[in-house]
Image: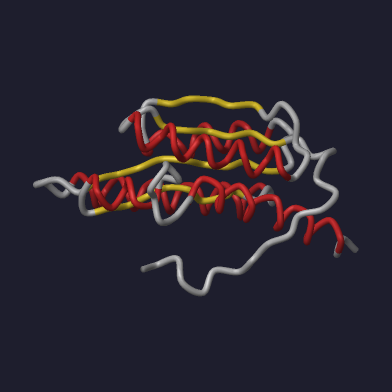
Length: 158
């Protein structure tokens, strides 16, 4: 399983961070799990009242993340799911979301937690959604990654 070898992250002193979550609407059950996991990680880290912005799908995540990053948020968590179908649409959306979110992070210097599932079928997505019975919680992991990166950058500012 892909979760093997993941680091254990301990997040301290994140209560003052301004965090935004941008989440797609497609695949409601999976997205509810991802969003729940991200909220749980933020709550555990002391982040209160994160802004949550919902967009239609994973393709729209980069433009929303860019707007939020430029609005002064310390971190943006991007959550979505793309399930492979019978056309190349999957490849285009996955590439656009990945490249776009990477560009947002690099261009703005704002960490973007990547919680976009790219799965062959819905069963794989459900296994990673952080729902009861799921093997992984990628929403939680994406939030932790973004917060850990913000705090690491803050600690090493010159």
